[in-house]
Length: 205
Image 1 (cartoon, rainbow, N blue to C red):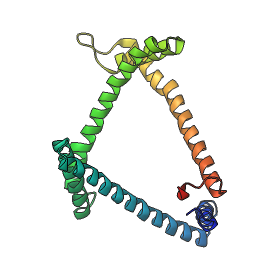
Image 2: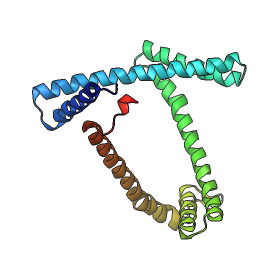
Image 3: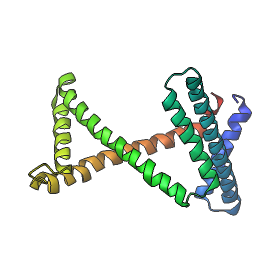
Image 4: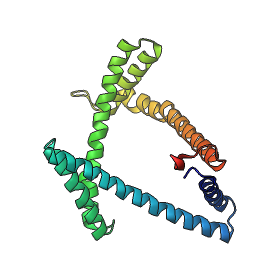
């Protein structure tokens, strides 16, 4: 894959897909659709290979009797969900129940743990790296948490809950998130251009 032929093929495919977005000609749009469909097939194949690799890892742990219950639950959940998704459509009642009863509660639980982790990190940060930014981070985290929940016997705090916390979430936090997304977009464009120009060759690794 490190040959000039592989580099030329990658550059040609990238240019054809890019031209299909900028010039809506039938020849470009048809090739773009075909190449994107091939990419989806390759992505699905890579996902299946990852499932097999994960199963081999947990099967080795089961044979070695290390974390027997956890590995068995992971393997059973993985392949039962895969078989159910193959048998039923994504709009079926079984898939919707799986999504609403397991995936969404698990995501909410992980977000709850993230809040506790953030609070713990905010408390420890001024001790490890004292400074104005650490104090500002701790103060912002405390204000956001106080404004997000109702305190026992007090309810929602009048100014923090209805004015300060929405402002923190919609102005500084939204500005930071947009800056991160802009950085990710610029990094993606730069990486794509380097691959198109042949400077980076991740397919040869």
